[in-house]
Length: 386
Image 1 (tube, one colour):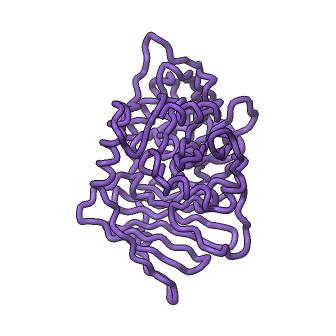
Image 2 (cartoon, one colour):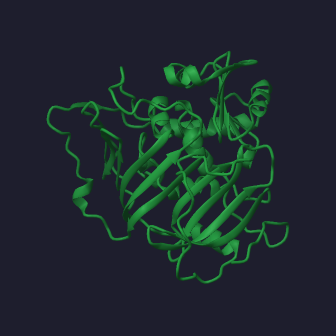
Image 3 (cartoon, rainbow, N blue to C red):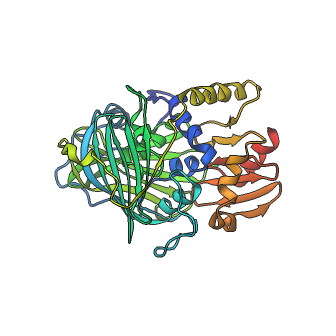
C-alpha cells in the first residue's frame, strides 16, 4: 500500500489533550505509569503478511479507523516481551516481600522478559486479565463494582468495592498489576500523533488470524528515545491487535505486545466471577479517591501556570517529561526502596538515573522524580527548571 506522511496540508487531527495525559500522571506516584505507558509491548517481528489484501486506505483513514473502533467484548491471549535493559526478577523462588499491585517491583516483573496473559472483556464493568507466570498465575478481575487482585505465588488476594455506578473507564478497569492490552498500549502512542510525527501505512499483516493494516509511526524529533512504532489495526473493526516499539538507532523492537488468539464473541459471564481460593489471605483495600484524582488534575493545570502542585509536565508530545514536586517522597521511595531498581539506578549529577531503552527515570537528591521517553539531559534540565 502507498505511504503518506503528516504535513502542513491535509493534516489528520488526533486528540492529544488531557485525558491520556491524566492517565499517565495518575500512575506516576508509583513510578509504574511512565514505564507502563512507554512500554506494554512484545518482541519479535509482526506476523506474516495477510493473504487477502485489505482495501487500500491512507494513513489518515487508518488512524480514523483505530480511533473509532467500538469493540467492547472479546477474549484472547496476549503475548508480551520486553528488552528494556531492566533487571529481571528471578523466575523461581518466593521473594522476601511479595510485590503489591502497582508497586515498582510488580511493574518491573511485567516489563522484563516475556509474559503471556489471557484477557476477557465485556463492556465497562466486566474484565479479567490472567497473567501466566512460569510457576504461578496472577489475576485482576472486575465484575460490576467488585475488583479483585490475586496471586497464586503466595495465595493472597486483595479486594476493592467500588461505589455504585462508578464511571470507570476501560483503562481504570484494568487495575494495577494487570498487563495492558494492545489497544491500551496503542492509544498511548496514537495520542502523540501530530505534525512532529511521520505516519505511513506498510504492507498488510495478519495477527491472530485477522487481516490488519500496518500503521507506522515515527517521531521526527531526535529528542526522544523512540525510533518508531508499528501498530497492527484490525482491517474490519479498527481494534489495535499488536504494537511494536523500537528504540532510536535499534534494529529490533524493545517492546511488543500482540494477540496470538482472539475471539470477538461475548465471553461466558462465569469467567468474571471470582472467589478467593481456600486458605488464601484476603486484604480489603480502600476505595480509590476520585476527588483526589480531580484535585491532582487541577494541580497539574496549576503547574503549567506556575502554581504549586504535586505533578509537573514539561514539553509536549514525544518530548513530554513528567515530574513530582519536592517533598513527594512516595514517588522516589517506590523506585529506590526496591533492591533491583536501586541497584540498576546509577549516580548522575543531581540524583540517580534509571535508564532503559525507551524511557529514563531520574530521582533527584531532594526526592523528586522525573520520567520521560527522552535522553537523561532533558530530565536534568526539567529538574533544574522546577
